[in-house]
Image (tube, rainbow, N blue to C red; front, side, top):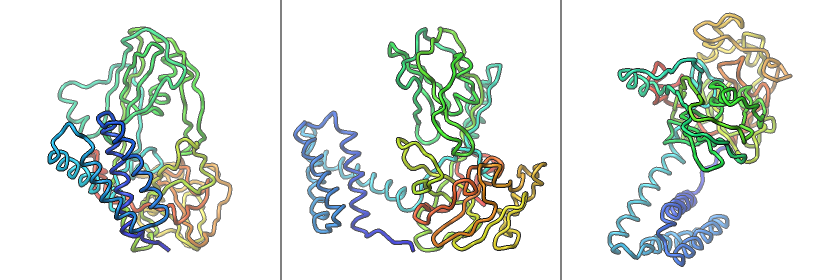
Length: 397
């Protein structure tokens, strides 16, 4: 069953996120006493949320807003009141939409190709940066042409020599950190920078493997630290395609059951077969929903059988165009579970269990390898690819 969270608790969660943002954004401006008072009220809010104390939550809502309005004495009271009100309203609206209606999501890997593209990169021997006319096309297709040469001589620091950051939701990038505090920015995600763009090879460094083959049969790597870099040394040269950005409907599953064949998003928590490092917490995966509770699934490559019959939904038929050897329209068909680390070719789903499979079956770590997805992990169906402006733009099928 799907249960709705009481409205007063939803409002309390939004208030908690709002006051946390207020503390983070205004910490440097707040007097120490006010900062301590607001942090104390936030703790009281957390306790009331845990106890589901509706009346106390109502009192704290009024008290927190009043305290925040008067928190910055250097501004006029009316100005502060207006700013805080606008600030909280904007946060509540944004978080409400993101938390309960629709959430943007970037496709991280290639497990759904060619239906949806993940982040990919390819190294180039020559400087790939386009002429002036090419930058508009690069923007519209969310493609980055990278050619980074070191502007500094020194050694990378031992602790986190490279860190990953994100500009808005479109452009993840990395920073190289030197022992003397100097940094170099490279507009590529860490996995692609260390793997496809061959940063390790340019530094003549052996990478450290820190992950498992999940997600999607790819290991994560890290620099060892201490690598020496010379000014003028090539660090990375290549093309990064940022992958598709989609809107996920977080609303529908409260009122309808998931539909076999749709593309959906879920979290990895409670799935024992997914070995996500503890510090990363739960992640979001996107796959095609191949099985719903009590379905019996079996792969006879390149075909998928559900309840004894060949899968008929359009999404499955699209994948099964491939022969297993020769792709058709980019699809190879469904691979034997042993190809992706699985060992059971036939599975019967139980109550509140769902089966996830990638359209790029030969390169998808999915339920064939790590088992069913619990109902409580479901986030919602993927609705619309809104960026980049390529052939994938539009409704997701």
